[in-house]
Picture 1 (tube, rainbow, N blue to C red):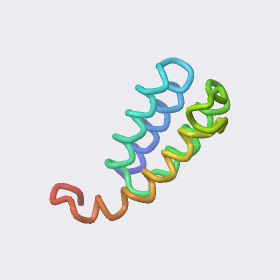
Picture 2 (picture 1 turned 90 degrees about the horizontal axis):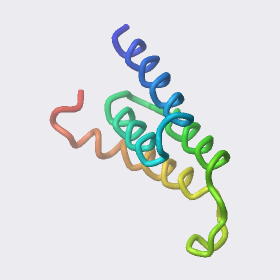
Picture 3 (picture 1 turned 90 degrees about the vertical axis):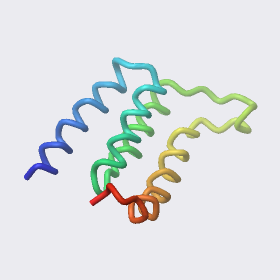
Picture 4 (picture 1 turned 30 degrees about the vertical axis):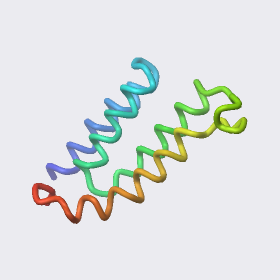
Amino acid sequence: MRNSKLRIIANIVVFAGVFLFPWWLTFLLAVVALFNIEWYIEIIIASFLLDVLYSIPINLYWGHEFVLTLVAIIAFIVSGPIKRRLIFYT
C-alpha cells in the first residue's frame, strides 16, 4: 500500500513537473523516483513527453530529437542491476 501511494505522488510530481519545471529538474525528480520505486516505467513516458514538447533537432545529437527518452531507457535498464547491489535498497 505504501508503494502505491508513493507511486501516485511521484507520478503527480513528475508529470506536473513536465509542464512547470525545467527539463533537467523534472528528469532529476524522475531519476530519484526510479531509484525509490520498483519498476518505475513512467520515467520513459515523462521523458518522451519532455522530448515531444521541448526538444529540437540539433547537430550535436546528429539531428535526433528523442535524446532524453533514450537516456531514460538506458537509466531504466541500468537501474535494475544497480538497485540489486545497493545495501539500502529493499
